[in-house]
Length: 405
Image (cartoon, rainbow, N blue to C red; front, side, top):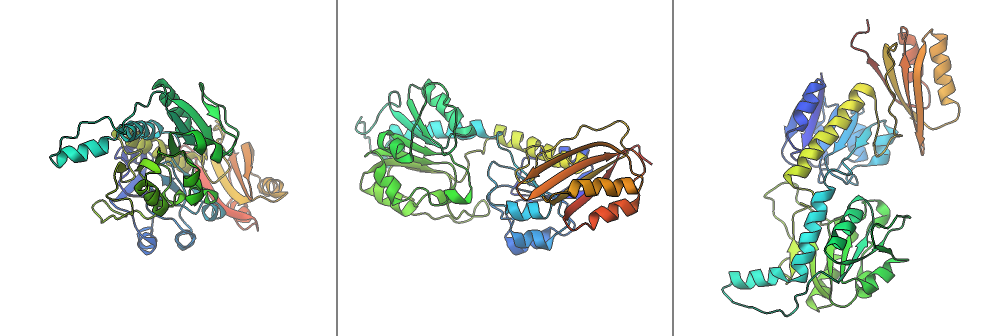
């Protein structure tokens, strides 16, 4: 029986999906550090994490039998994707499942910052009646600048327009503007006109440190700032300065460069205690609806990979899904270095050992190639071992149909 280790409390609806595929689930409520994770992965075939646990090259090297990793969240920057691909470990995430939850939190915070609700709330809790319109505005008619126009950015764009906001966006890739949203030619152009700036970019290495003193000083005076994306994007020490001198009217931050690994752990940030600043503990996607969707989606991708070698929506391997052939008795999943002639050599090896190919699909992604082959005849052990020993082989798996001898 295959075993899955789930860390950081993915939704419990993942468990019956694994059980239906014959996978035993082991759970641990918090994140693990590198040494703890290496120890915990003994005998584990599938690893499930959220945003805090780091899966490094050292972890992967210590467990060559690990088949797949599921990130029960959007981001995958906590996983060394290249190292995983080089070892034939498929990685899956949930790119769409919590989009609405993040968007709704962003909208709530945009309104709260624009109306300075945190300041009013704090005054009343302190016993002071401060009824004033000073510094409070409607969001209608104000300009929202969205940095990163992907799944979250585009949906936020639509909702913001429904509230009567003008939307401008900037993305390094060509993106279709939805509704009346206007694409800006540069980040600086967006910052010059936006009353609220919100970040929704991915966690690729090139985005680290993208928002520093230079960008804050390009912002419109008195604009508000949101980061519900990645903690390492922003220089929060500079943000603190800008809030204290009034250049930035308020901020909402959901992600931090260093986050506690477990609920209840101590937290500190230079942004604590500042006026009109909303701090949340990385809960952009933490709604019951989102977590249910993520639990079902990611566990489904992992079990489909385990049972049928499907890499549909994998973030690090070529994306393939081969429809099963009725005549197939075996399915061979072959991850290899993307070098010329590998597929021909594999097929020649099968043919020389009398294995009949019923169906096959090949895909490549950078330096990695992936082939899924259905065999309709006996599959001699010698053929499998010959392919396994090929110089470019990274991982070879053989799946047997339940009704095969």
